[in-house]
Image (tube, rainbow, N blue to C red; front, side, top):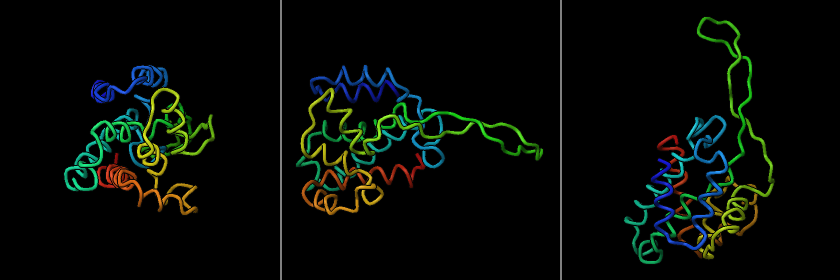
Length: 186
């Protein structure tokens, strides 16, 4: 999966993409979970989730060419899908807790917990990290920024609804993210 992920990013030929890949390789991005206990809550879940989001975004692009395929290059689909959750690199840590095993005996088991180092906000943090290495278009920034939709703490503003109206890629990425999360469980 890592080779597919990096090959897709390299296909964009976006200046700085090699440096972004090197940065991600210096983190736990490729082995991190996608969440603590919900979708993709296993080693490598974040990578698996990002690729699943890309596949869902491709399907939407084919289904709605007038909104997506005709307006966005494939590189925008690749970048937004694969980079939307880079904020989760070095975000989770494994801790131990007590739980009963099959024999009803208490044992220590590992679980994921959050260790926030850069409290910038979810979509915001992914955008900030990406912009340190590559240029993103306004549509790409908005899509990554608002990929959480109403689940984002900042959704109390009217900005995300406006962004969905202005940039079809925003809604498409949100839908792809939700499909990978809830349909695929990744």
